[in-house]
Length: 434
Ligand SMILES: O=C([O-])C(=O)C[C@H](O)[C@@H](O)C(=O)[O-]
Ligand SMILES: [Mg+2]
Image (cartoon, rainbow, N blue to C red):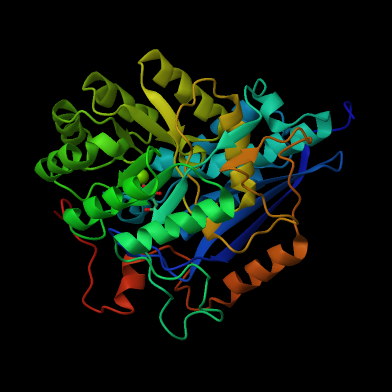
């Protein structure tokens, strides 16, 4: 295979809208469909690599000029992706005092926006390079140190269905989960369907006492199982300390209880449970303050906004140096990103916590075969590249849905807007909410 041209002759960008259940978080509720961007790079040698990233307008805006600049470069020129990204202009209105999805993914800077786009292209280039060389992506990252990657069940408070008339198939098969019994029932479904043995509950939805009760119910139903609670910064320092005091004994970690590094440092100083984050440490620039102040004990990397799989490994090395653990954050994603997450996680030596994944919530995918969790784990494939195959019909159908969204109501993720469909007075709550 080697000797064929690795030069990129074509880049295809396909925005899609993917079905998403009515999952609740502190900002509101997920819309019936969520945007993702599917990236294909085609080499002169005839190999196609696939990548995936966020699909809202602000990412598409950057992906288009980036894709044009990529033609003529080699898929092996991975460092060149970052210099190319530096030249892509970011509209100041996109980042001026803005936070992503109401802050669920931390600050929004021009660099972070660029990195969120670069990462999709990096994965596509690695997939193409691996296919051309006959090597799996994990080998291009230095080789796997485990044969399967563990994921946790990502539990959400959830409505039974989206508002009438907004989806063609309202029953997603999961039912509602709005109290401790509902959360335990959902957790049981996760274990039956996918074999997960650790659980993360998305909090910040109901007053803390209700969420404490849900965690206690999980601890009773699954004795000894690692549990996490993530209110996305919805609590004050005082509330965070109270929750940590009440359920710290059953938590593996508490994720982003309070907003911002100074508040997290205060919580960390007064709590015995470790704190994790995907909100206050989301860029390399945010590391010094957080680590110097011992504000977080686990950083949840998201290769999409950290700039790709190689940057995720760099993050893991920095964390290792400072004695901070690393694991993986997730956002609504498809099988391409699950494969990318699995390859990189397979190469990180000291991964001690199960990774997050929304994938079980996504009934639709753009792959010929859905990726399976067995005993809560995804097997690390040795197939060249990512080891996934694009299903063109499925891709076309999800793209047609994106094209049909004439009013562009769903092309931008907006959990607060989705909440207003049933509660017109809803505004995303200011933090701290409790
Ligand atoms: O760990 C997290 O903070 C997330 O997974 C952020 C997501 O946006 C989550 O809150 C969601 O999907 O609603
Ligand atoms: Mg989180």
